[in-house]
Amino acid sequence: MYRSLIVALACFLPLAVTATDAVPAPVQTGLAQIREADLRADIGFLASDAMKGRLAMEQGDDIAVQWVVSEFTKAGLKPAATDAQGKASFLQPVPLIAYSPDSEATRLVLVRKGKHSSWKTPEVSGRFPADLDVHAPVVFAGYGITDPGLHYDDYANVDVKGRIVVVFTGEPQENDPNSIFNGNGNTRNAAARVKLLTAQAHGAVAVLIAPVPSGSAMSPMQRSARYANADKGKPHPEHATFALADDQIHIPSMLISSEVMTELLATSGSTPVQLQMAIDKDLKPESRALPDTEVSLHFASRVEKKGTTWNVAGLLQGSDPALAAETIIISGHHDHHGENKDGAIFHGADDNASGTAGVVALAHAFMANPARPKRSILFVVFGAEEPGLLGSYYMAAHPLRPLATTRAVINFDMIGRDEKPSIQTDGIMEVPADTSNRLNLIGSVYSPDYRRTVGEQNAHVGLVLDDRFDHDAVNNVLFRSDQFPFVLKNIPAFWWFTGFHPDYHRITDTAEKIDYAKMARILRLAYLSAWQFADGRQPPRFLVDPRGRAN
Image (cartoon, rainbow, N blue to C red; front, side, top):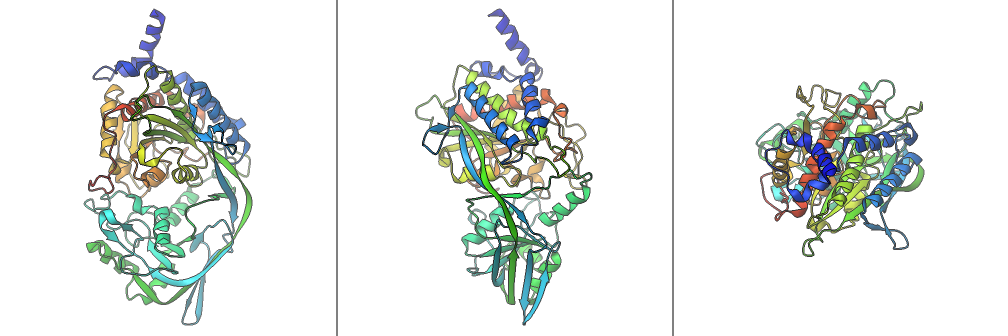
């Protein structure tokens, strides 16, 4: 007993330096199970050469999936899914299509006054998991946003049924810190997927997304060009693109250049800059049909294969019969980028072996704790995050537990490094000089309650908590990890993130560069925060708009 006490105290030593009050006794046993040595061993395995970069639907990633299943089993979690025979399983299948877009054959053709103008890459860029042709008149739909909570609707006075809509990227007033659209940060309306879902709901048959004429945000096309120019030594893999075989989005989209946008709007009576300025001035829609403007879109692709990746999900049943039906999710993703054409491996130690190991560590910690929280905790490691959050979008559409009673999501994606200047941030945002104890929390705009709870629990840990990515509309960080599909479902969901660094999406993201002591501190904070979410009287509220109207 004396030896056990000494071991427990040793595990708490990093906490005792900064704690302002004692860690509650009911959580201490589990907290002591979060050990640097375990994290080192787990990330060393997941990011090893043998895993071949954990590309979705490939053997290395399948091994990672089975490893998570094994760890969930050893921890004592209950399987949260069912297999094809209806038996309990840790695996939720996620059907995927792997396809290769033909950028040279993909094109946009403008038909006006009997004349045809055609554009291909790099002026236009589009991907769709099948050959597809779409021909329809074009309607300008502003920023492509319908948000009743903000009393803003680009589709209010325009009919887009059977039409192709052209919209600006981003949101109005992005440089105005007082804007209803989260000041100079993002709301969920800025996400391209949300623009597609909105257009589809209004009856559009395709979406063209153009750079906002005057603003700081990069368009997806500009972002791709920026990173491609910086990618020396072929650091990005060359493999097929993935899509969900059963996606909620059924219409295609295409990114277009400013020059193409200007041509499309030539009959609108206004230039793109004039339309943007008018919308941004008073947030009144400027949407309109474009006279004598029809477009033909051609998408060309070759399906490589169809297959399955897996979400791995295990459940800790809550201890309170009245609250056990409510759920806290702790998540990460297990996939990465595989190998490049030269056989170099993208090890993905930080992205996201760190998050996978973190979810596993917390599963062991909670299950080793004699006391159980009142609400249930669902531990999930998603598949196919890298090609577009596919596993998490699938689970949000096919939930294993009711979303209406899901109270919070803690999502780990890159929690093992110090943030450093990189192509992601150079010339865009300042990186603090010292990030050795810093953790970025992304999502405060939709749940200040969540942020407040984490801050209170941080009194036991002493990390530096940073929310500056919530105030940045350039990198679109809000949309880029697996918490976002749950934000779209009105669930308080945060991305826990130690920041970008020069090894991000490079073959040099390796296990020896992880700061295991810092990672352990982050997981201790997550453990304490998750316990509070799961056991506290009042879980965090979700705000349907940045001005504070609660769901």
